[in-house]
Image 1 (cartoon, rainbow over the protein chains, first blue to last red):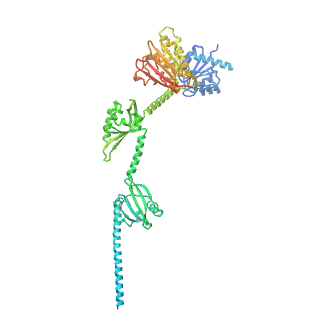
Image 2 (image 1 turned 90 degrees about the horizontal axis):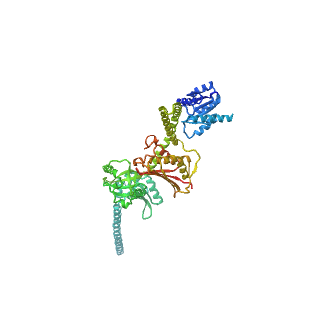
Length: 130
Length: 503
């Protein structure tokens, strides 16, 4: 079976490394991008099935990045990750979905099973749409 | 010849009789003169002995006469007679004097006005027409009546009324500390009537620990030192301590001797409370933004750490010391995540729709939730619920959180024979009162004021984040409720919550 290709975009390196570690055990092939420029370069070179995007990064907002990726490049599903707890989180999520992201999101700190659930839900949702 | 003689005789008689008449007339005139003289003297004496400055002027505004008081008061000299009154520079400047006099002379109407001299004394100037016996108006009479005392008395009466009815306490105190005046404001604030207060000393209003300091202050006042307004404490008739803002005014007698001082005191106890509440709510809102920032910053690395630890843990053989270490690491992450999660309660007010909540049901739901912990610590729960209790409006999750934190706290504070009474009551004033009464270790008096502050905890080690009660307070207040606490060391704690009910 073809390995699912995953890109993890977060400016906190340990998040990327840890998700890669966790998903590697489950048979995913993971790449890491610590900023959006690198991320976009990588997406141009490789077709990713799943992209994890952090909401608040130093140089870009996850919702904006999601918009750019959706508009110019082809990826499978995009899943938002965040440790933000503001009252407007729901609205941000709605915007993320509007921008082409997936409705299942990950609230930090999360467990490996949360990641797998989000992936499953997103793939299911995509399958339904397709 | 004879006839000539006779004629002469007749003429002589006539002359004699004329002479008689003239003499009589002369006598009469002389008498009249004397009378006029008397009148003149009378009038002059009258004029001179009246202690009111009087100036008479003609139609031409020239001075005709003035009395000695006027001479002194207006600094006139005898030579001023004949000069226009408007040409002399009197001690008293009277605006429109010329116009006033002309009006009086022409309209025959007396005029008067209150004026102030250069020393600040008040006078009533009256200008009346000068009438001759033939009712001709020949000028005007100007009088100046000193009304300074009258005016000042009226002013004093007004001031006295202001002070008497002031909401601020105004008292006069002599340098022995004896209270010599006491207004209604003082009665309202401190509770003693004027009659009682006048037998009291100011020191009866001062808390014991402040007396030394206040005595020193009175000494300084007595020395004539200026004292800035200051905040201090007073004891009222019911022995309650009040915060007051005091302004001191030194009183001198006419000779300039310092005789007493007045204290104007405003009760700022409530203001203090409001201020404290405001500071508290500002603290909470600052706390909210810090919480949001901290949560965001910490959640990412924490997420990475946790995932990584778990990934390593899975690769490690169960039962080894490494595996145990990974469990410890995971627990530590869990603990940090817990605190960040609790912080989030400050950061986001409830956003789910407002529910109508029955507090009895909310408490029951929470008791089910933590039945395990209650059983584990064998704590006896005594439910004293009011049946058919009216609803309150609020966020179910948050009210549950309030109840959960309070029950959790109670459980943690009790060791053996723990008993928690949870009482709900519908009070008369449309309030729902909820009480949590435990028999645990209680709270030390010095800590009572701090327990609602974030990060204040007496729980040892990892047991408490110090956020539980701070969250409870902020959630209760978000529901427009109040929370208070009563406790004595080793006598347990009672938390009393009050919410508005929906009728």
